[in-house]
Length: 84
Image (tube, rainbow, N blue to C red):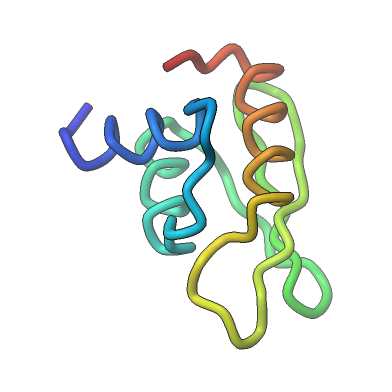
């Protein structure tokens, strides 16, 4: 795993979530982890990783991921057996 991907993963699992994690960084990390993507309606993106499916809701006008979405992403990664 590259240092950049490790940094993003560490930020997601941090006790103090960053509000400065960009969507492109999240997508790049998920691709590296082997996730598959399927476009949903509107700004939704279905992500499948290790047999677990999750729907990401990308903001229309924001390039960073909201903290609430990061909490949901953390739960998804844990359920997909991804650890920091």
